[in-house]
Image (cartoon, rainbow, N blue to C red; front, side, top):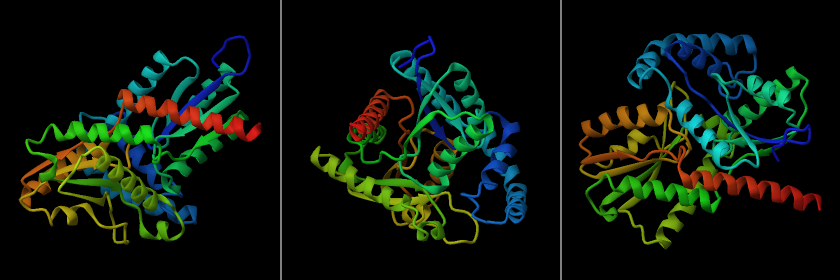
Length: 331
């Protein structure tokens, strides 16, 4: 429903963490991320802000260097813009937009534009395939806060996760098959590792479903690949991006890699739909160097789904299913 004459207009608003649009935004990105109560789970705002400033102080120089290596910005912005442009160009039933949690475009800016357009229905589409309070909930809360600031109260639906959607998983398998083309060996001689962003174990222990949803997603993909005759030497999973002295979700990726000396390894970033600094720098550069150092024979990283046709197909299917379920519930 995308009409001009004041009738209901539905928008699909994609939500993600974001990343610096330029080197000058690196500090803003880190500051906003570590001040998020869902990321740094310290109840006292003053102490959370204090700890956040300390973390940013020690991470800023290295983070700026990392983004400089990536061309001065996070790849997540351009990939997301490409996805939104393709959806708006080819599927005019809805208006598609995106907002980032820690860097522009922020939810308040995008919602202000929607308010002016007269949009009265918004479907929030988390670009995190697995639900977590640190990502999905945090983004939803940002939208809620922005709506309250704007006194804008559209009807809102939420897509919280979709790791079990068959078309979505078909898109992942397609990218894995594309990744295999970069390795001059049959899949039976390759170890596939699904790498996910780590979370502090205390967040999981409080009931966050993220880790279990990641594992469930991998189980689904294993069954689908087996049914298609895609056989790997072994399939493992691991967690990346842990920091600090607290216990994070295990196994750690570097520990898994250290058991694979002399092997050929293919990495799929299971917890991301859009390439970002953690895929293009951490996985593709830092862990590649680590893999070479410890004697891994070949190391390759699959790209995320980004603006691929199969991901767009999955998105439309997920939206259709969500709206159909709503209509069925109201029938």
